Image (tube, rainbow, N blue to C red; front, side, top):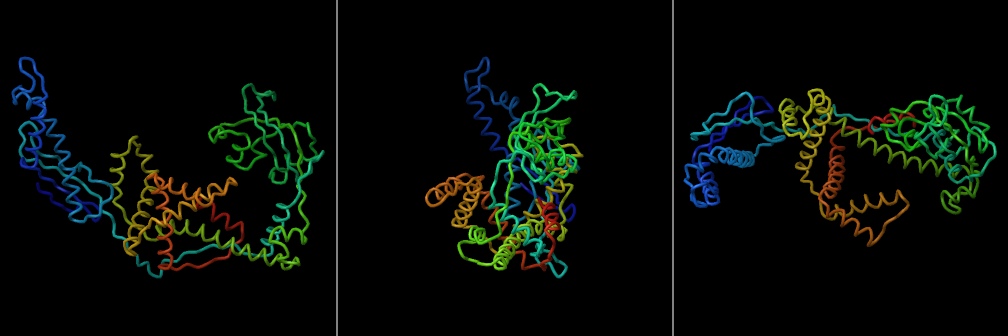
Length: 451
């Protein structure tokens, strides 16, 4: 067998495969002999049919099947031997027809196209500048944090009449066009936080509500976006999109939050007994906590944004036409041209990030150890259970981590978390990063862009 490589362009090449009889004859002959041993034909004992009869019926399909296997094996071996970094797998070239006679087999020639992985340059130069947004710890932020502490440690009481900051707990009933309960419509026990309503007219109408009162409301005006509306009514995202008309809300309870006093009792609850003794010292501690919290938030958002921005900065060229063909050929569900054009950019960026990770790991001789996998698995699982108020420790956490790592998909997911963290840690010193102080509102906008 002979394989010749010729460049098509910088990132694609043609592999011309010439298969000779010596490459396939013995394999095909063995299979045909096995077929003959098990064959039953009228007029012949089992396994005694003439070989000519076996060849006539089976030679061409057996040859085609073995040819595919041989080519796949040899292409893989060639690519490994020549150390060719490819993307995807070789695909038959459409511009070149295969040659060979399947009825009277001799030499066969096939042409395949391969997509070449671009070279990744890890020397970024002075132009690689990135911004790390950090929330300002100003008087407004400190005051908001102090207020949050007073609310968290405040008391909740039942009320007879609602003020414009109370929480109304009640029942939603979907109405029909005539303003009557819709048969088979949506019913949900939920609540309305008057303090957070943006629609002033609705907020004013609900202020002064009493237990037992009913109000016809627009569900979009007592919620904040589709996700919040779905949770409020207990419906799916698709149902939210089709939702029309009003709901009747019956008030069952009225809750009022009374913030705690900003005094020694609060300070002890937040920081520990006698850690501070004055409001000035309490605010300084709050500012210190905010600085640490905002720095963690800034680093979390920066790392997610950094990956996107760095890929964009590097402008890594890809064999786009080849990859689109490869995606189409390997996708279980055929994509339309419109779908492919829409989805391809994110796929290409994902592949660029994989290539960059591989380049960094190779350059830094980066590895993931078994100990690192165990530690990370414990962190991930511990954090998951902590969200539900179920802390895991000791032997139980160890066993959960071992079980997770026994699953190949979970082990790969945890390894990917470690690799991404290590790669970003390695990349950060290679570029210029400057902190920029922003307001909480501006930081929220930056964070929303990477979610």
